[in-house]
Image (cartoon, rainbow, N blue to C red; front, top):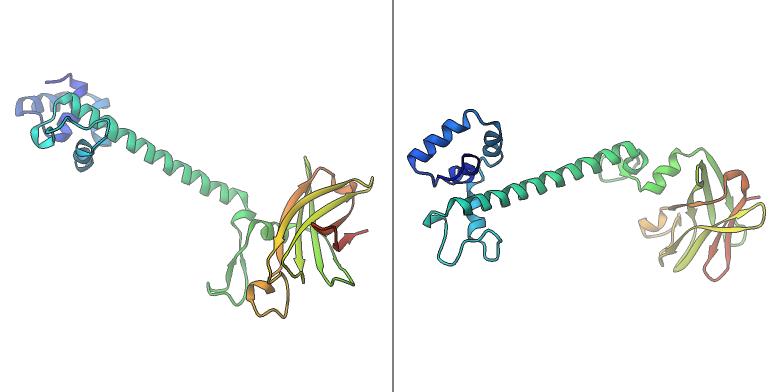
Length: 247
């Protein structure tokens, strides 16, 4: 019989003879470590058997050897180690998922569901992070350009690193590539964020496409503090100003 602590795998696989099994059970009654290992591997016999027969597995027996041929205790222990590793990785993945769920709960806006009419999910419509942040921010300024008719609302909040800005953009057609630019009181310009406008556009109230009726929400950051920003500009990549928000 293998060492008492090494007999867990052989016991799980049922390859100990009666005397060895009786001796192990007597040992098990006073050994918390073996009891924990046995509990970890409870119900895993099918996986152990499958691992033993998988070609290329580091625990695979030699050709012609299988569980039906009563593997050696050392092989049994290698199988147990592999299953224990698989279980440990599975537990870690579970913890990662729990941590991600907790982050969404603590993060607030990233997981917000807001009431909205006309949806197929009982009046509840999921918000993206930019839109959710926009709804919670109180410092907002809006402007409509008299020529382009593009309407923009910029919401801002002070951060230790500068300014977090969220843009709501309406009545813009595409295809186009645009940027939100923060212009400082000292004349310096910083690109807050950029995006592409698809052919159907954003925030067009008379659009046939439902997606085109929805405003665009994007967000980003600037190194300026809020009191250092003079205004914001929505610019196309070829240098056309679509709308200016602020002074």
